Length: 212
Ligand code: Z5A
Image (cartoon, rainbow, N blue to C red; front, side, top):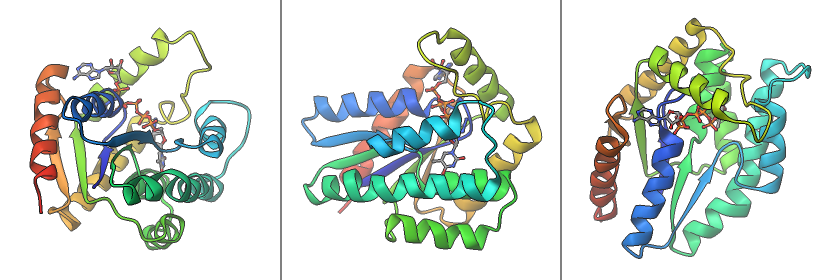
């Protein structure tokens, strides 16, 4: 099972993907928790380039191809071997994020992005995607709060720095994807407190893992 966690900025995916990993551990289900961009040494290096606000100028197409490069490595090095070994893979963002952010957010051609996604992932698609739904303003406030709490590393604030319209386009992009493939998505109301959201996540995981 390949399960991805998607949503707008600050919607609680990272918190919940970690808790979901602990839940699977408590049920003795082999799994890994991973993230994009990241998951591999190359992915983490690309992540720093892409997310840390710096003087580096990155145009939209270059950004798209860097996310794709991180994904190609991640799929071959981590995700496919884990799936082959029978582990459940829980992944914080995947190819839907590229369509939502680079396609709808940045305005790059969505059909070209779909092709690049297929190429970089070797046609790997999530079995199920949990979408953490939250008004973009609330998510941005949460994400900003988290950035201000961090003292250990440079703030990952390249996307948080985008204006509200950008984040609204991203949210609309996700809803277009959900309408295109409603059977793959499970919508989680992320506006509730962490425990309530977690209970919903566990309920979805139980249902997904009992699927034939
Ligand atoms: N991106 C892209 O453009 N193209 C791509 O192909 C891919 C990604 C793969 C990094 O992703 C960025 O890369 C992302 C999209 C872009 N855009 N941005 N920015 P990421 O997943 O690593 O980081 P993120 O999207 O920025 O997520 P985030 O800001 O880390 O938010 P989150 O993971 O959804 O939430 P969180 O870290 O779990 O929680 C945020 C804060 O809210 C934190 O202080 C929590 O304690 C708090 N929180 C969590 N849940 C709750 C509830 N229920 N109530 C109240 N507060 C809560």
